Image 1: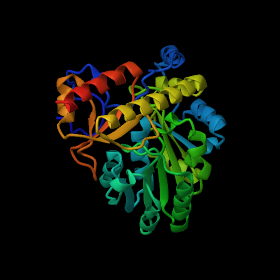
Image 2: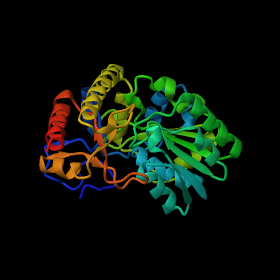
Image 3: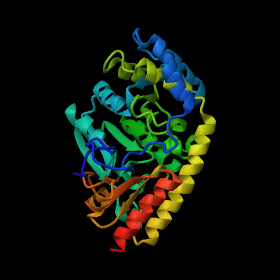
Length: 344
């Protein structure tokens, strides 16, 4: 029952606490909520298919040309549109990794190779990835990776971008969770853009906008952006989602508060789990990968607490779990429940 392809209570389970979805525990910023409500006055009209105002604001904030930005109905939508537009014949992904990469590639007839992250390296990406890129038309990596939670080191990220440029492979770097890191501006692949690079980001996680669906890509060339923009549906982003995104880009204090809280709570949660004898893997974002007894998920569900089983991730098994980092009060309830289970 717990082995689903995504986090979130999509099976309508009887739970009190949901640690399976990695959304900002602070909730949607109030000004973003107000912007969504105010946008209702224009809902009888079609939304701007080009997301002009949103792209313009993203361009100013990120320092990239408007022509290189494509917005979509969440990061998932853009993954499929990127694959549809660029049609790689052979692609390389890591394992474990977000399942939609393989699904999107396979649906368009692409052969998918996996580069397995090793448990002895705490599932961190290493330079060995560089030897696996040759022969691929596309490389998809996430920084931070889901479900392992680790950001790719800057030096390695630069080497990967250069290698893809040399071999002609597209490099899609999924940064859907990078906003939870206080050093995101330093660690982002936006600093390494070249003609083959595509950076994918999501508003969903950082701004708790899962129900609105909004993401964007920054492409290393206008030609790639135009191909992605031309793929998929014409009105890909709703009016309320565009309004939410425009408002969210002003929420600097909210982001600062979020990153500080996540770092403090993540460190505390990891320390408590480690103290119980649970193997916790390093994380740079708002979730933690850990290894425990195989029945932990089911036993927590009996206590109306939902975590993410990672048994369906390639390279992991039923003993691996991912938990979101929530508020201090919620985290303490999870810690207490796991402690009772571990103590028998």
